[in-house]
Length: 148
Length: 441
Image 1: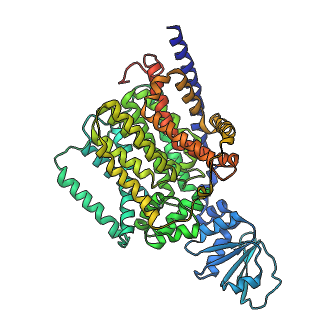
Image 2: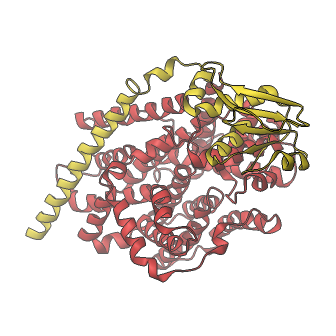
Image 3: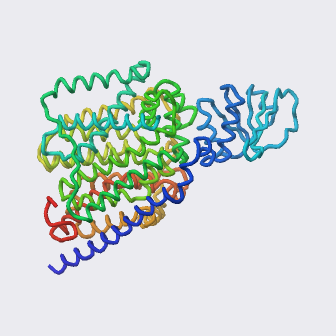
């Protein structure tokens, strides 16, 4: 009988603490709508996406304006950039290769190559166009889109 | 307007699922919340089955071809069940002030995850790299296609992608922002099903308390709308719960229809995530134990579930997908202590789980005999053993793998853990003022 009473007290105590934590966590989450996330209500779709994805969304939007549906080769070491661009640009396809030279790019007959965070291109032979991808709000250059 | 369209699709699916369950299940054996929670799972099962079959048969997937079978279903429903009274949902609030506050808090959390779904974008890693991309891939290629598997180098089952394609096609565009509300819709139906299931073997106060415990799990809130909407773990946990709840009702009532529906839910789990295939095998084993205890055999009722489960395996056999990295794996016995230690750290992370796993360990300690015969606990334990083996064979660094994935695997099992703790807690505290004194409280 005493053992049963101990079980009841122990379990009641744990459930009570758990309930208190749950209530506080629930209220804390609810409060985020009025504190942390309040600014999101006032943003447009573009502004919100820019806020969430950062530069990557600006890059994707600019690339979509310039390109016409062909696959794009992405160079550089940023795997995260590749996965987000792959998602945001779909159904336009993005392939990612590390450290590839412009000669190799041409041999593989890509139409577009995107180089993130580049400021200039050394070898411009046979390049039809080099379009800087610039954030229109901050005027920051985010990369270059090379049309081969 | 797109949000409104998504909400209407979700509500129509819920109502259809509810109406079907309400008509085919025996009256008085399933309460209102159970029917609402289970009905949506049935509707999602039908959506996945429809999109999978339409893709296989190469029927053009358009708004009209999607709506046609649903129209037939609705017309058939009114023909066959025209004399059957539908239990119209009516909201009755419990008397106690604490219960009322609990319902207000639960409602506020449902609104919160819905609003977060509207305010957020698909940003979580798995959402962007796998699940949401799969949905876009199916939509733009007009059905379940292996192209997206090759392009994205994934081997994930197509269930979530098929559901997203269903939404995109009905909306007429690939609006990946609006369909986040689908992931938010899983959250309230899990709460309904948990409440309905717990209430059927305890009382309203206990059901409300434990539903609140699940609702305030931070990981569930994140996957329902905040930051990680677009992941498949919460939908998978919903199918695990649905399967367990129907199997439990079958065991209690010995009505074969509950068992049939439970096998369908277990089978469709294999379409949601790879872990769902393991769950189906676990389900078959646990349902066999249940049949032995009942001394009755219901083997034939597992066939629809086996067909569902096998159809995805056959698809993979005939259309080889990107190979899983587990093909390069082997069992490493020496890492058992490392895996257990890392898992233990996760169990006691109060910031993620509150007291969920502590509560479960306490229940096992206080009522070991009672809990091991409880069906949801058996499902959860065997599935967990399966997860343990995943980490024993993983070709990745086991610590990194556990840190990066165990929380999501445990979220899949969290509703089953809540059912088990509620069952044990009620058994110990049923005559106390804490959980109410009668089953009708």
